[in-house]
Image 1 (cartoon, rainbow, N blue to C red):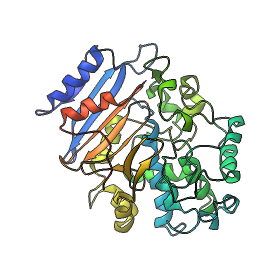
Image 2: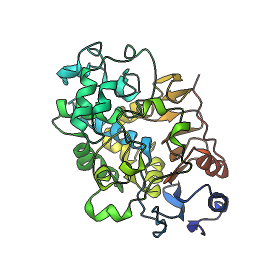
Image 3: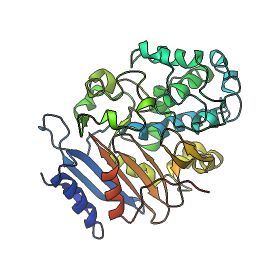
Image 4: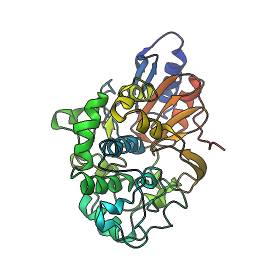
Length: 364
């Protein structure tokens, strides 16, 4: 199947690489978008949006990029900080009383947003909780002791990130995460992105599929993704119930154009993110806060409040192969969103076509 869409002069190599990925059988459904100087210079689609291969990938196909969801959770939390309902460094137990037990009494929002809250996975007791029981999952986090003293170690809060922020927002603002995103963050940024896809957009959602039957067994991060059961089960993640739920760490549904457009304006001093948060919080969002060995990634890296950063880029990847980034060197943004769950080698090849390095390194 031929790649569709456009790539302006100077970006033809991106099209060629995407076509190679399709021809080699490494891609069955993906979108690529590149923005530079405020406009989209590449918008490409490849393959199919559904497992039955009856719906070609379109410009408006919605993909679930797993952890790319997290920085929109971050923005919802920072809006509450902007409004004075929260602070970054006050214990979240000041608002969320039930959370302040068993060593979590001094945990701060900053520690949550930089993946140092000591709850990188749900506790064993949550194995009996259904994937879509957000109340039950929040309660399990309330009762659990942290795996380490908050602030002393680092590990991406792979599945817990959204539920932790949701708990804080409900306690401090009286607003759940999904509502905070859809009522404030989404319209301010003009995003085609959803936590809980509306009925009229369900036909745009891409089905996830494994690249290999044993893909889950090969994952380094698997121990942090096993509870609750189902986050990597396409039988669950392709269901209408999942697509219309809010699981903040993973299940935002969005387009490649929306993600690249967001990253293209991320650092702008007159951009929508800065307008949403104000200068001080915008600076906090993008500043490098911690550099250490991240046990979930299995490498040393630098976290801002929600992003991974090194000397070349501000970025985020999602398990399964999706990635988006702003190139600090070349001043363009790119998003590669895929439905074929595999490693990040495909996105890395797209990055190389743009002169970018998608490997993650720490800032020493």
